Length: 108
Image 1 (cartoon, helix red, strand yellow):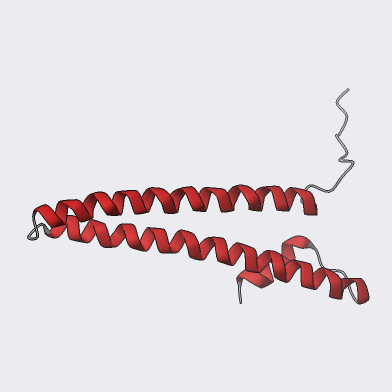
Image 2: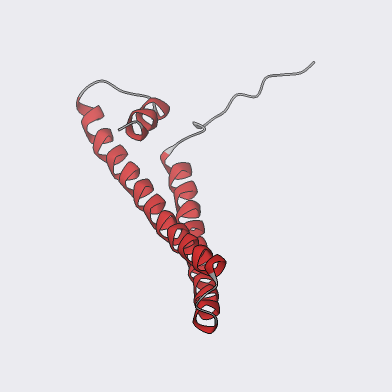
């Protein structure tokens, strides 16, 4: 007979969210470093041949990627800060679920 597994702790508790956030931020940092390395590669190509339009375009794309990875890390930190602030206000008033809180924050 198969029994249903009952979780003893919530699936999305504060510790798990912090662990996931830490991983995402480190991945954003790695992506940014790699994008800047590739940007330097294409920059060297453009310095050798200033007429290379493809290298110029790819160089700009690498800068956009590096910037977007930084922006995504900042958005994540902002979401976590808002969650902490709302947690303090939730203790005083009504309680919202983590998923509805994340959804409302991402739609702002």
